[in-house]
Length: 212
Image (tube, rainbow, N blue to C red):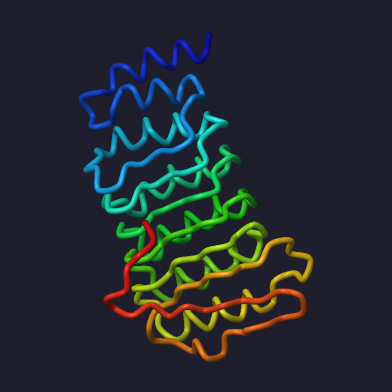
């Protein structure tokens, strides 16, 4: 009954910029991949979408790159990450999270240990944001691929990330295999090997292609 009622609400949101069929599918727990890159989604539609994804136990891929998402939207994303434990792929490249958005998002990431792919390039995350994010990343034991290139994080931010990841628990079951950092920073200090865990740092050049 709750799913049916939610579906009726979602059907009325078509004018907000989200396909009603997508929202209906989310309400019925039938959608595994949400692809809304450069969709020009309105704030109201984004809130409705987050509500639907948060309640779904099926969504594994959430791609929202290029939608101008900022600190306010990061609150909704943090709630999604707290409630939805099925998401393993989160693409937020080319948005406008900034340090404040990174701080809020980190609050949700620490409650979701299942994320394997996290893309946050081109988000204006500075040293403070990256430092906060680092605290969350060390608790993301399933993380395999991290995209943080093209951010104004500076040496201080990159060093904070490097130090935090180097100090991550040894019992981490997965190997963090790909990390893309800003071109500038103490990348040379990134630990190439730590016990039974290998970390590989890929430094993105300004013209490198981002993951799709």
